Length: 110
Length: 111
Image (cartoon, rainbow over all chains, first blue to last red; front, side):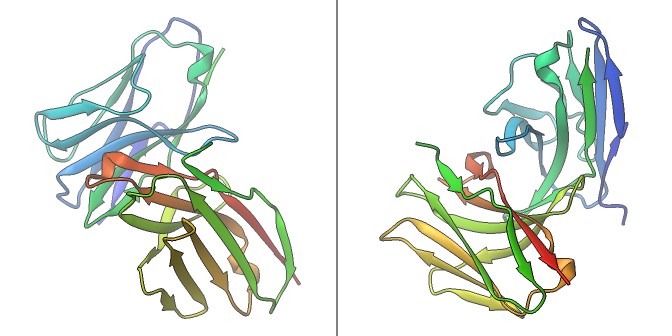
């Protein structure tokens, strides 16, 4: 099993650009989530999904969209990138209260 | 007050030392507690869950004190490979979306 995979590993955007961060898992977990991690702050939940076709907002959803068309994939879209979205983004799938994180995407918005 | 608070460290200890971290939480209704480990520039990984009666996994011991609202992690016989950031995670309610992550405590184990 590959577990949770994320692409790209690194990305630099200009303010106003849009992009999609990809996340996939091969463990057949129903629950998936997106977090951002910033210095001096814990991981914060952006959006989450409890199954295909079902998504909901987390703590910091503004500026991000998600969709969950399949169990495996949970992409995160930045609609119009802002410097405040410079962060490390982690996707996770959840089983029995354990979060399995992907390797992360380091995003810089100039 | 932050929902979950940790001393950021770093804790600098020699190999073989015993080191302990505490984490305080503000929500008295919190149900579940975890310690995650995060290596530099890597993703967090579950180290252990924390049970009411306390639990041990090899050199690692986790304890919960509901009255004082803190959890602790004790590492015995520290190894160089224990150098990492340890994240305290508290679930304030049922459902993972209520998970609150601490900012982490950094541990540096030196030869």
